[in-house]
Amino acid sequence: MTGEQQLLLEHTKQKFENMLGKFENMEARIAYLESELEEKVSGMERLQRDYEGLQKKHDSLKIWLSLAEKGGSEDKTKEEIDRIVREIDNCLQLLSE
View 1: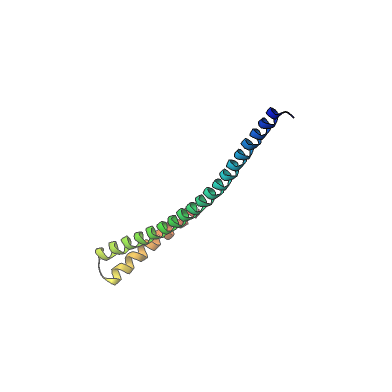
View 2: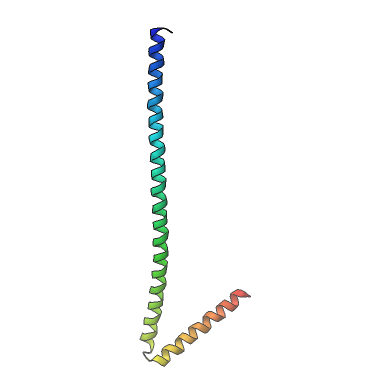
């Protein structure tokens, strides 16, 4: 092998090793970013569940406040709740048919 061929081979080998190093770095970066993405998705899902739970609590509070404003008395509030429960039961029955 001539000196020129030897230099070309050495240069190609260095380029290959350089590219291989960059490839390995990119693989590590991709793995890190995938891990970060999974954490973010999990966090977003948890926040969504928390939000939905808070929304339900907020809706319940709005109903209770509405009932309290209507009558104020405990008997009227219970009657209103019973009416709402009956209405929900009727809706569920209609949906199941």
